[in-house]
Image: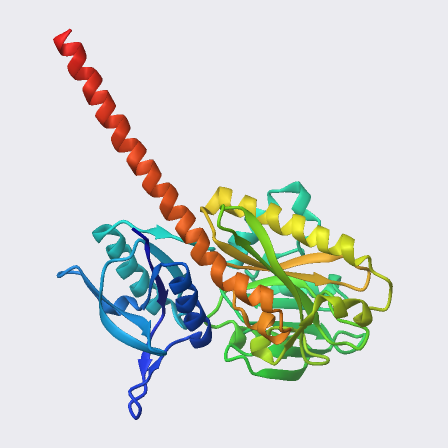
Length: 394
């Protein structure tokens, strides 16, 4: 007997002309389906709108003959959450359906849910060994707090949405003259378009800022010069995953490089990924690569362990680190639904295979141990009942 694993996505579409099924992360899901066959696991892709609560029936998509085909499926033993909803209402509706599915048949979740950036920052900040790697961060409450921070930070301030992803909505604000009367805003809109605006005076800055934050909650951070010698922004994407024994392993580390003079290095914002081996050529000073890799590895595992203690078990986490010109590492982001594009770009075949197969292997590990625990529990209860009966007849 092998487990049934279902990857849940936000939405599945059909091409009206070809009747082809259009899945998000199409290539990755195909690779998961193929890997599941090799592991003798039953694999489906589902969307929660296909769950009939009254009938307790679920439809899903199975990979067969190089096509995705929709059919009635058995309720899954394991859920791998790859939902990327564009608004909170859809996410909440989908989450409610997922909860009802759990009540219908108990299943294992591969990944716990990360809260917003501010909540994650506060958890990590409780650990003294991580504090030095965290950029000073505050929630935006009032314009006076932003203005006060701008006076203290000669390179400007970064504002980012508490719940943003893919670099969307990140903006740098800094004074473009010594009198602090001219201001420049550069960054990305919530639709991930780059922009640059020049403003005159605090009043114009305040008015524009309130327009920007109208429907979002933001965090404030000092602008860190996380750029290479040619002024290309970059970060280090570390993919940490559980293996078939339930232990954390570093699957790969890639360097993500943004466009010159921009403030983000996200791939969705036009960035590219290159091999970690190219990093020394981008820096102005020597760096001990072996020591850097060891530090990234230990910090990632330490942070992952802390997050699991507070939030529950994770199958995988991606950590984005910045490296400034003084070679200070900064832990910028944590992602519980990491993409795989970086490893495709750098042609890291081993990482591509491991990043696909490890969630399945870890799911099997969880399922096997859960079954063993249930069998042990049943055996224990049966033994206790037997002992109680013997005591009655003694």
